[in-house]
Image 1 (cartoon, rainbow, N blue to C red):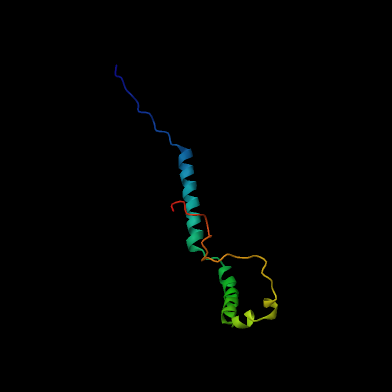
Image 2: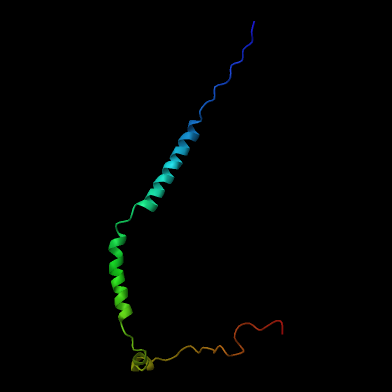
Length: 96
C-alpha cells in the first residue's frame, strides 16, 4: 500500500487581481488626461486676457498729476503713523 500526498491547488485571489487591474486603469486614465489630452478652453481664454494686459501695460500714468489733484489734497489723515526711525517701535529689548 503506497501513501500518496496530493499538493494543494493554489487558489487565485480574485479580489487582489481585480483591485490591481482597477488601480492600473485609474492611473492610466489619469496619465492620459493629464499629459496627452489638451483642454480646448485654454486656447480661447488666454488671448482675450493677454490683450487686456497688453492694453494696461501700454497705458501711461501721470503720477505727479495724480498727486497734485485737489481731490486728493483735500483728504484728511485720521490715523497718525509712527515713523520707522522712532525708538518706540516694537517691544522693548529684554537683553539691554
